Length: 77
Image (cartoon, rainbow, N blue to C red; front, side):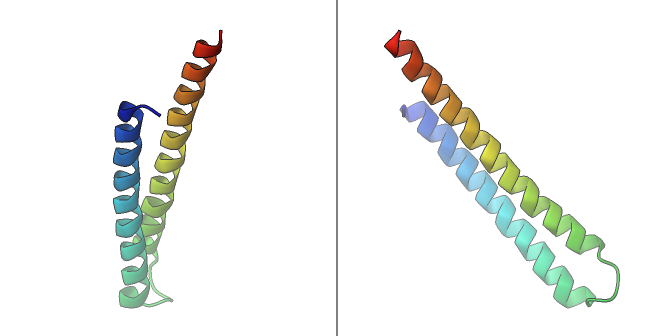
């Protein structure tokens, strides 16, 4: 991998990690602070942020891997 790809991947890793921590924090705090039987709006928001951050990491990783494979394939031809 090139240094540019490593920079992009590390940015995606830190961005997604922060999103996962924020989403998990909101989810856990809303479960304990709001009670289990009352409105679940903040729990849904926290879970959505958590899952979205995971998707961002997965899609970013796939883009970096696809770019890396296309460069290797171009070098083979």
